[in-house]
Length: 322
Ligand code: SAM
Image (cartoon, rainbow, N blue to C red; front, side):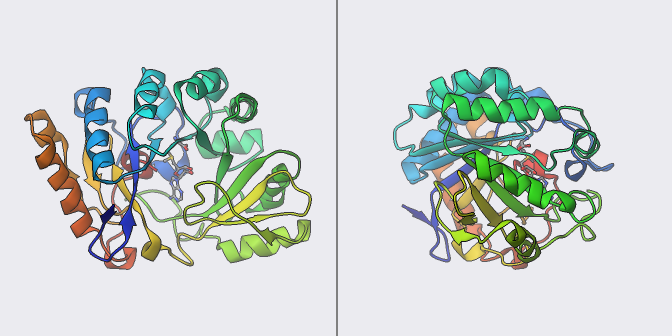
């Protein structure tokens, strides 16, 4: 079992397979950061598998694929099929905007994906088009239905709550859990990415979200698969669950169990720190497993105790891997 300098057990690697995306969400845009990585900078699937094997041998047990938008990278289903068979992997999940999920859910499930998180900040088509830069709400809703139909479980909905943008839809989004076995997770907006718009003004604390939802009924604490730092509740008689991720108002650094691998092969010990350790250069220079393991171990030694000891991250979420 891997543990860091503060005794935290680290068993979770978030792997970003691309920085590219088929949406242009406001919180992932910045006039200072508009370019994509050149394809040759992005780790190949073979390289990813090699690094993930090293991580698994060291004690990583959970992998989440993310991006950018992971579903737009060609060959992802085959990659997942190989990944899901790796020894030591106990939990394989994916974060997606859901735009391509209707057409891919069945193949993803067959390849060995177990569960999925789908980002959805609004149920209004015009607002979706404005916040996400593309008119794809109907596709995402189809994607959510497909995920449920093929048996990906649990299907979680990630909603970033932004004051003045979508805080008037909290009840509508929460109501989804009454009839469908979805877990709607309300995430506090985080100041990630230099030049990203309306960070401070848009903060809406989880405490207020919860207060608003009480109008729909009493929230009873419950549990969930892979809940991580989310606090999970359910309404009486509901098929689904509600989660709160208090990334800002009540940080959970003391329980942090993760490392991140960026699409160009940087190992990032903390989302909120720009500190990154390069795995790609040694990998492409033919490093042996021992040398690559050392990079993982250095990342653990350098993982900050809390994000208050770190700086606000300069890179946008889509380029780190959200
Ligand atoms: N394209 C995939 C998706 O949309 O889920 C994966 C990448 S996206 C960057 C991952 C998650 O990061 C999304 O749920 C998005 O809402 C979230 N995110 C991006 N910027 C954020 C911010 N500043 N604060 C909180 N969450 C953010």
